[in-house]
Image (cartoon, rainbow, N blue to C red):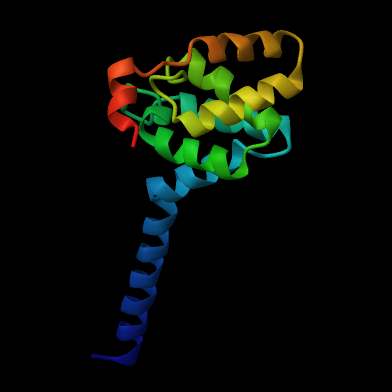
Length: 144
């Protein structure tokens, strides 16, 4: 085989690999998930809009598939505005609350709500009051 054939095959394979990586849903979603904690409100809004929409041919919002990744990212990189935006968007899709959200993220969000004050502080009080309580039998079973 001539040398140019090997070069053509190598370049084609490398190009195919790069295109495959670029189109990979995880990489694409990862970039949008990074943007939900952006300092720019417009970037956060665009990211949430993308996550709230279903993928082509899909029926459920992308955030249903990526909720675990979103929560981990919010816990590690979330600032108050990003946490409040996340709470609003997840709540609008029925994905926020003590039944759906890890307790660590709930507590961080409650702290952000308290720092924001006003109506947000009232929401924080509501979330604290609605926190599930372990039944007394469960508490006794966990005591040393």
